Image 1 (tube, helix red, strand yellow):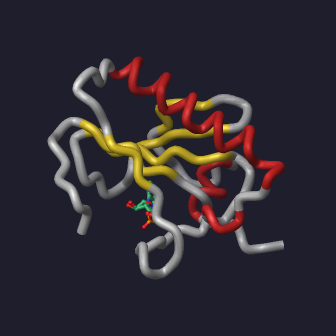
Image 2 (cartoon, rainbow, N blue to C red):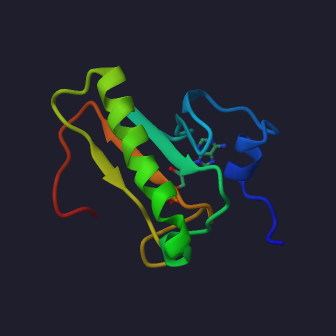
Length: 114
Ligand code: AMP
């Protein structure tokens, strides 16, 4: 079995995080190096390393992550919008090999991304 990632340790409460949302399958917590006034990391509790590893059997879990983000946005009153980003692999700069979405809000974002 692959070594537990930082995010796996947050799920198991082995290291602290500011958790803002949790249900049976998903967890969301504040990013330790925020890039916007709101910067959350939204993850499945299942240890899927990246988008590259999402299987057909994971389709419900991945869908639920988006339902969770919609609920978080409503809870935080983010009526002006937000950005959801996932990095997959080296070229995208993925550092933590546990599938995650960056949920960013509270400022205007530019396009294209850097
Ligand atoms: P990525 O480059 O897409 O893999 O992003 C990993 C993100 O996880 C970065 O934005 C980090 O700031 C964030 N991060 C790393 N360790 C922690 C931690 N212990 N608690 C919260 N966020 C973290």
